[in-house]
Amino acid sequence: MTRDPIRLVRALPEPAFEFTFDGAPVPALPGQSIAAALWASGRLSWRRTRQQGAPRGAFCGMGVCFDCLVVADGRPNVRACLAPARPGGEVATQEGVGHAEQAH
Amino acid sequence: MTGKRTWDVLIVGAGAVGAACAYYATAAGLTVAVVERGHVAGGTTGAGEGNLLVSDKRPGPELDLALLSLRLWQDLAAELPDVLEYEPKGGLVVAPTPDGLRDLHRFAEGQQACGVQWEPVPPERLREAEPHLAEGLAGGVLYPQDAQVQPALAAAWLLRCARRSGADLFLGTEVTGMLRGPDGSVRGVRTDREGDLAAGAVVNAAGTWGGRIAELAGVALPVLPRRGFVLVTEPLPPLVRHKVYAADYVADVSSGAADLQSSAVVESTAAGPVLVGASRERVGFDRSPAPAVLRRLAAQAIALFPMLAGVQVIRSYRGFRPYLPDHLPAIGPDPRAPGLYHACGHEGAGIGLAPATGLTLARLLTGRPTEVDASAFRPERFPADGLPADGLPIDGAPADGLPADGSTPDRPTSLAPEVR
Image (tube, rainbow over all chains, first blue to last red):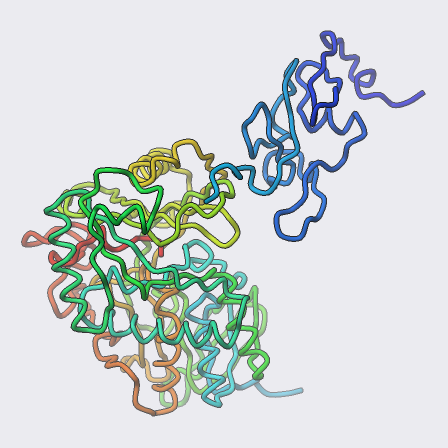
């Protein structure tokens, strides 16, 4: 039997919902962070660094390292490890600094 | 191996100033050791913005030192290309009111005689220089000589160069006492981890902690900490081109009772985040967060650049400027403790002044003439009663209409970015 953390703590979560990541549906549980849901869906990396193009995902997982940035509902530089997943939310890969429209 | 290890010069402190002293001392052919209690750039160097400014300095010895230092930074950036994040971006000082602009022009005219370049920017040209500046400003002054480095990188590279020239570096090693020669002169240091390190001269480059090193040699040097915060935004595309700050100074200078003075200094960095300084408070070495200070800095920055209102701050940091009562550093030999030299107390200008300080000290150590007159930086200029020769109070207590922060009245203090 897999060691499912939900069973380990005998959690009784509310019903699952979906948000989208770059248009693809991702299942999530209430209270789950965007990063946790992305991980659970098999995505470990969802951004590339601005200079070297190296892959990045949740590294510290607690809001310190700013590696896991996503665009959430149109807002860039959201830390996926801290932001809760939201039913119907639209999460997208962040390109560069996520403020491309302001560049001049 | 027996016997003490010996160098020509032993430098205490591996911040920007200590690193520059090591760089120029090795270049002058001296053997050098650097002893640092923490790590490279772990004190005030790592807590600043890396400003290399002439714009905020009134005519006088500090401006002369800054002008020399800006030239030396240019040379260093050419010698160490692409690693210092050196950006000769220029400074833009803006005035919200016509009165402020007039003062700003008068200030710049005074600086011009000393070699400072500046050009007036009329209000209709401000947006050409800085497209995202707030509307309604009276005008500004552009200072093309102002520049920027990444201070921790700069310190690390200067030390790396010194080590390539044979310098030794002892990190995590605290100086606990001075070694004395038979005549009582300072002949090295005692440390907690490396034992006794002997040297012909000891350089106190301990920054805000320089008073303690002086004390170990039995002399007083009234270096006091002045706290400053810096806000760091999320990475942004290049929206802020210059080092931009407000010349709206008289208010926070003349309100002498206020513990906190702040004025926004806004600049972008090579990595993308925008840095917002600068506050100053005399609160000892208190490192606790101060949301009220951060809020005020953010509001002042937004007043200059309204688009920052929609930008996230991802962190803040704070540091302690080493300030001496007359706002000038202590550079040179200490006649009260032969063998001891000082290179500390640069307040918020230490990164900018580091190369000129290092070069000056190397010249003094090798008995050669200095490029600038260093007599104003004599470390023994503060009498034991705490009043320096020009009568400024040692702890910034108001006296005869002087601002409580100890700044001289004709110096537009908010022209002086606090964490530079």
